Length: 378
Image (cartoon, rainbow, N blue to C red; front, top):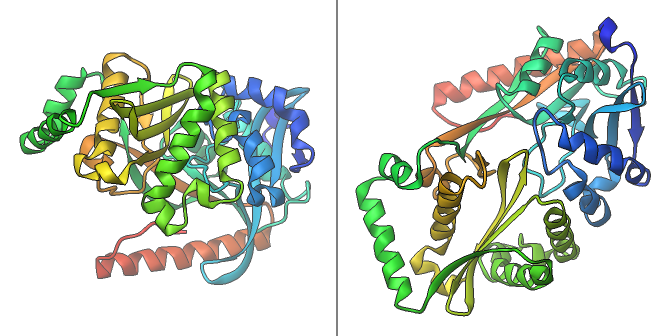
């Protein structure tokens, strides 16, 4: 049943051809979202819709209260879950999207979830359940979702990734969280690098430098392990255009933190972060393989840490890295809990299919625990 407060809300569904007409409203929504998400704001999503093939099959769900947009999330349809021929819906995430929290206006969290869950099938979005992917566990949205959908909603997967969130100054943070032996090693590498030339960190300031910085980044990434593995942006036909567009769009919106490490006039490392609501999300990092022995990636992350803690450039930074990342987990002590949440859609058959999937997942999880194996479910 739809909550009376949400009865006036309605669900509209757009596709990649029509979503552009909503960009102004989406920009306003992103600025007032209870949980900011730069990956789903027009700053990045506009470019994704024009350059990335996977967005072509997505549907874009917009929840309106009267004429006011109160919530937004992309959705895609999948078949096959827990080795069952089950059709379900899930948050649509393009290949460079590392956070799936919907954009929801402050104070409308429950209204948004009530509407999208109850109206999905009527809007032509057919599936047994809806999987909300890459949610921040314990955040305002995940909490509201569990309250709205309880007791039938369940966490289908959970994991943690490193984040930076501390009131300590940089030096105090490093002393508290990093072993002395490791600090000594990094100082030694910094001193050795300074013997190669003047070491300098710079952040992008002027739009005239955008294309040049992007070209540097594309070359560094493609010449490194991502390029060798075929996963660099430059290895993707549309990757370079996508990168340049999101960087320019974020810079114009004041939501870009683009950091580089130079030795004399040579760029040897770059780190791209996007910001929203005073917070930051790491996007991509690359370095010159010839300087790998100096750990330029670590140097960039340490400089980001210093800027965030001492210059207060960001209140917190999500690494967007995989769980147990070998580098960033050793630098940042805090952890961001992430999860996928499955919610059955209305109807007995949908609820039955969801319950069966849940049973199989929980059985599989118990087996993993008995065997001592680890992994993100779903």
